[in-house]
Amino acid sequence: MSDNQKSITRPAAKNARPEWAEASRIVVKLGSALLTCRETGTLNTQWLASLIDDIAQLASAGRDVVIVSSGAIALGRHALKIAPGPLQLEESQAAAAVGQIALAHAYADLAKTHGITAAQVLVTLGDTEQRRRYLNARDTLLTLLRFKALPVVNENDTVATSEIRYGDNDRLSARVASMIDADCLVLLSDVDGFYTAPPGLNPDARRLDVITEITSEIEAMAGDAGSELSRGGMRTKIEAAKIARAAGCDMVIASGKRPNPLAAIAEGAPCTWFIAPADPVTARQRWISGQLEPKGTITVDAGAEKALFRGRSLLPAGVSAVSGKFDRGDAVIIRGGDGRELGRGLIAYATKDAERIVGKKSSEISDILGFAGRDELIHRDDMALHRMHRTAD
Image (tube, rainbow, N blue to C red):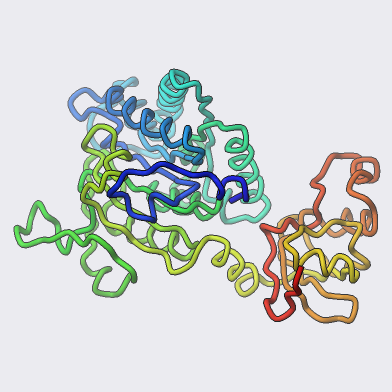
């Protein structure tokens, strides 16, 4: 999150939890069962309009919102008049191709009533598992947010195969939340939280308001039951919570079976919060420093070293040497002139391009490489520095 975003004063309902009131970037996941009418198979436009009203209010308070939306297959199935029952993969892909158009138009039209531009972003599993595609998807989403657009993300069902697809949007939404360093992930469901047992089957089931650790007991409480239109049950929500919490993102399961569901969360409506153990920056730094194999080394001069520990990005001008074989998005070791490891980061250029711009000004990159790349060799948001080396400003 930028310093400007963090400095914004955001009005919040009196009963709002701090995890909601202080969230600058929010990902909201919507399931097919909420977006489509079971009886007709058409879009639940009135409910979706109320949700967009909530999002417009958040946007007006300076908060970023990304939607992860299901519904394309359900809508396309209705339009193509496909009979009830399980779909073959090619039928799902055909239905998605039709439904994605209808869904995109609906989001665009409703967002436009608030002066907001909606954008459709279709992703596959490879877009988050492969680093270069991950970075491209991340850059696209962050750029859309910078332009105050409303990104609407969905799995690209028209090209995904049964072997490489997510299979549910709960986990996809958690990956998106992790990708963009979101503060809060909202899973809107047909139930108002996580229960000790399925509330429809067990009269003694009780909702857990706050979960601070996902234990084996919590996992045992999760079931696989989902609605006819939904691929995901409570177990996929627990998997989503693991992904989100590991990225420092709080997650909430709340009811979507009411109008203005986000406003209801702010007002203290019943729900279940999964509290993250760390903020997104700390989690991302831990991931960069400890869970990625470094592919090369970047050696910096004394001036660049001081700048890094003052929170600056690493510019090519401050680099004295490059070694190793890496591609854009790979992890590299950052060393000082005396060989000390200062930290690690995700490089913005492949080896050959990095070698060509070492020691050069950022304004020269375009002329040297023949394309307009990033000004930074390693952006400060993609860097994890060792605390022992931090220096005072």
